[in-house]
Image (cartoon, rainbow, N blue to C red; front, top):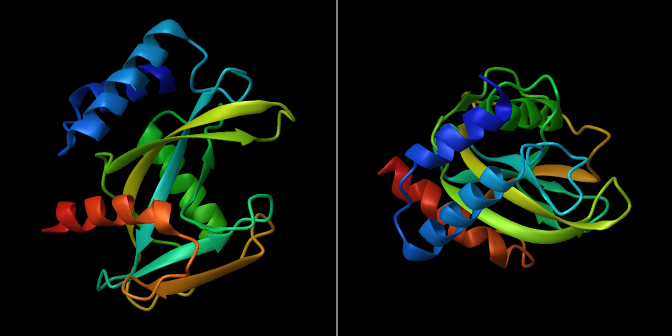
Length: 179
């Protein structure tokens, strides 16, 4: 199965808890139906990206990266690569590369969707159709910052940095998923 087919299958089977996320899910499926290249970075109108909300073993902290281009604390994630065969595997690969943590475990069902405008590596304005997954770190996991980050640190869920308001719905979706 191709990454495109897996993305259609993953989003087709997922049933989000709220109407806004369901509306986004339907929009993603429409975009995927219209664009065979929707999972490729070269798709100029926009492309699917895969990210991971990494929680520690006790689910009271999340690992965030200070993104060099955006200048904000974000969840780990990024572009799908030609070698990715599933969307969940792309999110797990990104989380492992950006955190340096071995033994991460991913929930294969998305927890949240977000579309955001960005000028990424193409140098042109585009959109990221981000599919977000919950990833759990092993006990006592120690991250190692990659070259893709200015900083990388664990943040208590009840004491996040001030500029992460847009991450709260994803965090809430992850905690609901854990219950």
